[in-house]
Length: 202
Image (cartoon, rainbow, N blue to C red; front, side):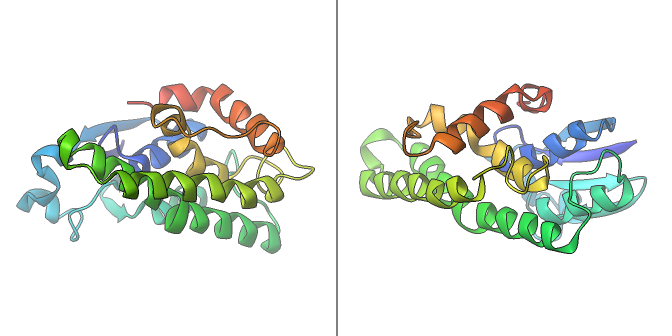
């Protein structure tokens, strides 16, 4: 059976959980508690040399990095497909996933890092800036969704990546303007309605 080394609050871990659930794959969840720095234990470092999560063990083959894991799952378990068949569509999906990984998700990490601190020690300016940048990201998301239900047409790994962050919009009170971002608001509702959204929460 597939083993997923995961931590429930981690957005990158959730990203892989969503992909596994969307593909209908059975997997064992092995929690690695980041708050106890379990990711730095010598035994876990044999699985992931950089001491990060998630990591996936598929019958002895270990792969890490959420994006690489999801691409592996797509290659190894191609049905149902979570990537377009054409090269342009696949490139678009990868670019949007990279936008989520390299930009969108990073600002959520800033907020999470500050919220872990005692209230009096939090950098409110860093939090406010992160919220501004997250909101700004919806300019691109809105444009990508024009005339489409999902980012590249059919549901794909690009949508999976963003799904992992959707719940945090509510938790951190980051509004998505329903007038300015009409496409994005409808897209968020579609993502929340997918069974994998609720099932991936833990």
